[in-house]
Each structure stands twice: as C-alpha cells, then as structure tokens.
Length: 116
Image (tube, helix red, strand yellow):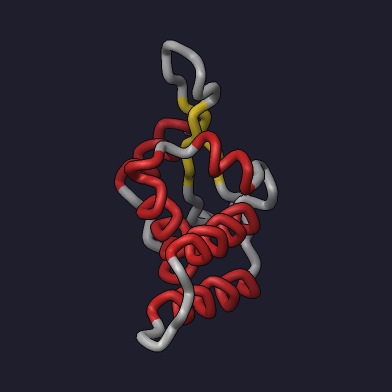
C-alpha cells in the first residue's frame, strides 16, 4: 500500500465531563487534489491585504474547509463545541496548511507511527 500522508485533529469527547478525553480523527487515506485548490484559494483570501473578511468569517471558512478535508467525520458544530479554544484558530490553519503543503506535525507523525 502506498504511504499517503495523513493528518489528525483532536476534539474533546464531552466538554461537560469532569475528566477531559480527546477523540482523534484521521484524514481519509486519499484526499483529492481538488481540495488542495480550494485550500489554496482560502489561504489566498485570508492573506490578501485588501481582504475585508472579518475574523469570524475567516473562522467559519476555515471550519468549513476542515470538515471537508476530514470528509464530514464531524460537523462545524462539533468544531465549535468541542475544539479547545486557545488552540482553535492555529489548529484550523494547520489543517489547511497540511493540505496545501503536506506538512505533518510531530504529534501527527507520532500518533500515526503508534497506530502500526
């Protein structure tokens, strides 16, 4: 089997629980190059100096893209309710960067290695 790069995202299973447990999602084995084009367009829109996008619109568009990247394994509502806030925007951006550049975090590499 070909070694295709994958990525992970972790969401809190039950935000109301006393003990926080994370649920880990893996990107699908195959992500079409069409999604790369969409992710590049999104990055261009976000980084455009003349952009009039407000931070909330940026967050909404990033969340929509991340749900698409993960092939609807979770919803935008799940991201809003179950992603840890201090890391949220960076986590969303890292997901889009993974798609556009293929960069995995050390945490992702370790997680996937430990799955074997």
